[in-house]
Image (cartoon, rainbow, N blue to C red; front, side, top):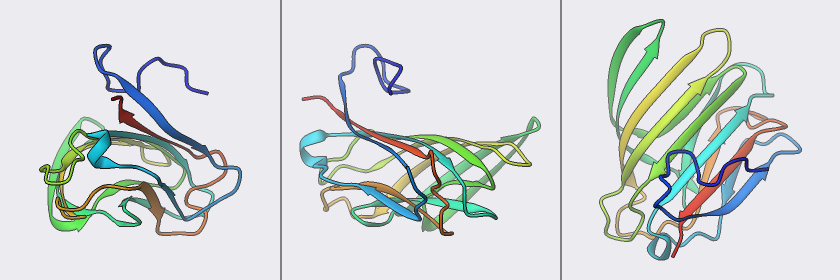
Length: 174
């Protein structure tokens, strides 16, 4: 059930359409929302609440076109009013890392072939230590010359996407 008129982060002047909402009835390690056409859609918003049923830390990374998304990123982490910053060279796009539940929002404002592709991730990781993340990133894989046809998640552990996990993808309305 969607309880808002526009996806998180959208303004009332923008038109967005829900492509898919997936609620997990069983645990999974990887899931992709397929059937996308980045050239036609022009941009995406992706939100999820992941529930870790696998035990230990579930590191969830972004998948585009059926493979782990790779890129350059800059992170600012807020925890107990202490701010630390870290930047990565070319690495997997880590969305969350938690022993319990994570909620995040990702935006890819330009998805067409040839666009400089990047975006922002806002994440809240639950568990024994609460962490909130803000990341900006630029994709290097898939290359900007490749159409985006799917968006998904993968966890480093079985059932890292546990029962009750919710994923939604929105596209720009045409």
